[in-house]
Image (tube, rainbow, N blue to C red; front, top):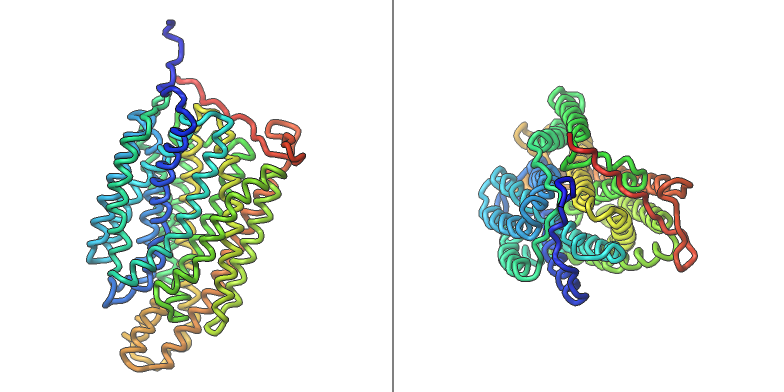
Length: 537
């Protein structure tokens, strides 16, 4: 064999259909835990903000408790993919699952908001090892014609995990303390370790990518500074302070430097060149906007049900159950309809419907019949399922096998970037509007009471209960509802932006990426092949 001959892929022989289904089931189990934990914390926000039952966390600290997870997830995602290519995807899955379970145990024992934020970041690092390896194993296990369906199954259960997280949290919080929402991960992680070790093959890429420490520092630092600037704006109730706009500007500059560094590498861990494909780029931007809108909305909806409406964590989670069922139903329906017509038609219309559902929350108040909330969640969940599954399948299923690891890293990183920006934007918009609304109603109160009431409606309610000041509680509820209405309109705008991008970016074209006719006579998007990496210097 000539030295110029490329190495053969270290791939086991194609497993039989039953074995493939078993492997996919294990991967779904592993990924479901990750996506579920990304939203499980929202139901515990009200409890964590309680100085007696929780940690007395402020809105900014709660934003970081969620943001630290998604920030580490997004920033370390491409490094996780490179480690899988180097050491084997099963080994990376095992390491990620073990790290996730260990960090969950420590998060459950946190005694301060700072400790919780730190362990949530470690959990995000474990997730960053799990998800790229999961996507890569699918690429090596399934033949090209079968990969879109396998990717769609994974994305469908990702949506289920996102929707079901609050429900599980509600059940746990009704019987245990807040740390149970993390401690439940430990036995699940142990079970996952056994399944992965027993059934998942240890495939690895023929191209061993470098770990790219410069890219890791630039991407994580850039996202971190951008998120810090947005969250700090909520704490200061202003975007005009140097600490706010300076941090955000520095973050954007680091992200731009990260892209420039990756473009100069022959084999980057995060390959921006894949985004030169119009449909690949549009699909990933759409998914980023979907996750941005979802996480932004989850911040104020948790406080609406448990704070302004007074429902328990369990009741709040049950009210959101139609949303989870909608995702379960919408995902396979969206895939089937996209196969008969087109991803562009089905998912852009569905995302526009989801945006209308998100925006309708701006009409809710403290006396709105609660059945309307569940109905809106059902419509929103169904529509979101009809977006995530078809778009993810179209984006990842279009890549050749040797680019599946790089493509899944781009896809997962941008989705988590959307989550980071969503929790920062949702919390910040709500906090700024709340403070500006309540300020005029706090005159005449003692300074300590006024300062605490400005922090959040939750602290204002605790003060009102302690001082028997019913007026303060009513004022706080009114300011929060107004802030939620403004946040809902912004959230709907984020989703509509994604719908418009998908409608424009997935349109038919004569050159690479044109539509081909499916059996149903409709146009099915077939993106052009991914660009090959530049030759090594």
